[in-house]
Length: 296
Image 1 (tube, rainbow, N blue to C red):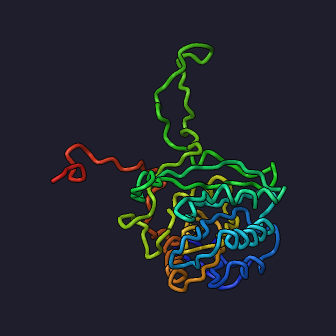
Image 2 (cartoon, helix red, strand yellow):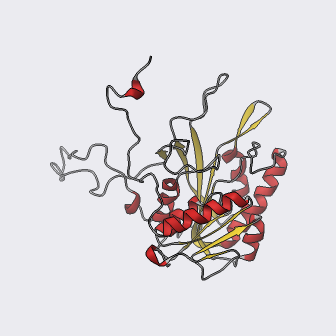
């Protein structure tokens, strides 16, 4: 991996030696060109079939059929012991919501080698402002592994202990600190902001997800030199998280202007120059007297 000041080799078609493969076109074309058992991590946020600028709205049945084809290819390219992560929200249908993780899970469960390890709730505390239902404030990440002998290292993604000075009060460990010195397991509810207009990572993409979401998986389930694949690359968030931690990346994007932004962001990330929200930064709370708390 040639990060830092030495540049970043970006190929436009699948390459086993490039730092990044950025395919401008259909994701199935890229995935089908890749050999089996090559990726350590496949992670993405697919279109939700809600009519955004980058997708054509279809029936839910058509959408699921297309997802089934993509998922099958992702499983094929995934190494034994690798991880597959699908981050989704809700599909809106006839005025009601369809939680996409619930309707997509059977497509993953069809592949017997996949095991669901976590259903992670990403809570971002703000977003939609609904009038006729409670506002949506979370999305879901389904994390599967290919088999039971899988890579997982908790230490790089530990978060600060809630009570770092807590000690055992009885038993053989009485008086000793009870928390892990590197921090605690972040659990299956992750709280950090989504990428809106005032977020440091914001681009023109309407549904961009934050680098720190991908970083947790990159650091926990891959090692330097491993391949990280995003079937729906968007503006390159997954590839940015991969190259900044010396992993290789591959992904596909249909929209030319998103692919161009992805290329720029990836090069910045490889040089350590991409501005991102730090993974260890707590969610901001306004100080007493802040202008953000005042009302006219």
